[in-house]
Amino acid sequence: MNVYDTSNKLAQEIKQSEEYQNYKMAKETLKLNQELSNKIKEFEKTRYEVQILAMQTGKNDEEGLKKMQSLYAELIENPDAKRYFEAETKFNILIADVNKIIGEAIKDVME
Image 1 (tube, rainbow, N blue to C red):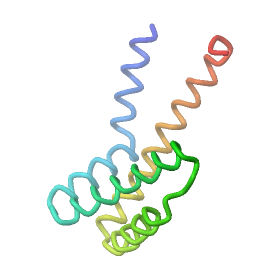
Image 2: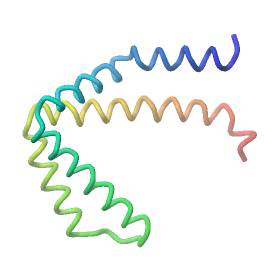
Image 3: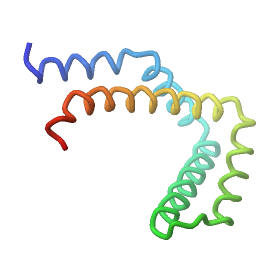
Image 4: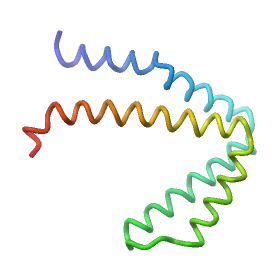
C-alpha cells in the first residue's frame, strides 16, 4: 500500500469516526437555529481576536476575555451549543493526535 492509499483510508476512517460524526451532527443542528449559530460565530470571532492580540502583543485583552467568557457562559446553557462545543473539542483532539503521530514519524527529517 502506498502513502496516498493510506492517506485516503485515514481520511475515510476519520469521516466514519464517532468524533467526526458527532461534530458534523452538532454543526448541522446549529444550522437549524440561526440565532444560536450567530451567537457561536460571535463567540468564535471574539476568541480568535483575543488569541491574535495575545500572540501579537504578548498581553491579554481583558475586555475581550470578559466578553468571550460572558458569551461562552451564555452559550453553554444551551444544550445544542454545549453539545457543539464538546463535539468540537473531541474532534480537535482526534485531529491533533493524528497530526502528532505523523509528526513523530517524520521528526528525524524535519529537524
